[in-house]
Amino acid sequence: MSSNSMYSEDHFVLLLPGEAERILSAFELTEQLKAWVVQHADALPLDVVQLQGVEAQAEALREGSCELELEPGRNAQWYAIRLEK
Image (tube, rainbow, N blue to C red; front, side, top):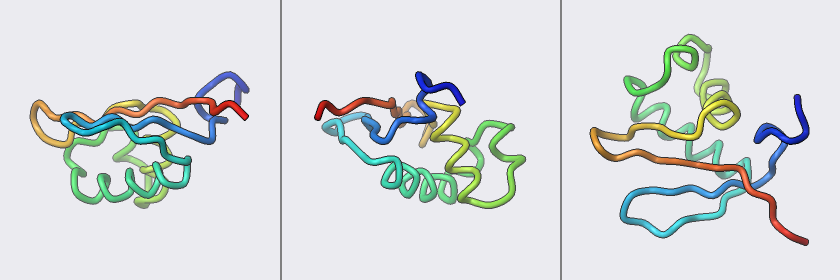
């Protein structure tokens, strides 16, 4: 894995329409994505659907995507960020 990719990031900003942005740890984002994987299985990308298990699907979304349609016209977006020390 490349050190400059989002794969190695520990924090993410989560954007939801009509809500303030939230800063989440990789673990917190994965937990949120797991809930969405269960609730919105029909909206998952094909490569994610083919993975076995909610955990693997959520991690694939976190590492390889940055958006998920929660309902028509309402998308969740997340981006890796670096927090300054």
